[in-house]
Image (tube, rainbow, N blue to C red; front, side, top):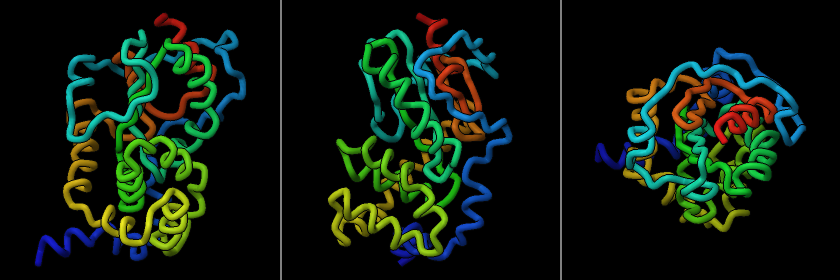
Length: 232
């Protein structure tokens, strides 16, 4: 019986957790909220200084869940992003910065992106679980959830709001509920976050590790481009 209650906790909490509480904890980011640039190149911008470094072998070691990756495995630059689905800074990055980085660096074989889950609240956990249940549509689901973030993060009943989005992605009500009551998946998502915090010092979203160099908080297109260009 205890396990059954645990399995239902995330699904039930989507309606129970006030939207205001989610918004307060969504990013846990004390850094500046840089506005994303529209330029697709570094435009002469200087690269920001990293706040630390980690060992790449440790960073890329196998974790609780299979990696979700954009780009070629042999790309000279590897970007590991820790994000939360309810984080406005993360949504800003995926909406306004990542498309240019993807076009100019990921699609050209210069860089690859590995996205890892770092949820701060049950709604963020639910969003990531739905993306994982989408299997080969992980990034498509992430993109939709970030594009429509306000519609479900700010909703009083996020369960219903997420169900409507999930239906458009091919979920039935049954598969939606099965996904959000998958205790093993929830445990694994939480394990990814715990490893990020314990092993790599992640405490805010987004946090990026670019070839092992740590950058906390939002990065503009110009800033990320300058970092990558300096590594090529």
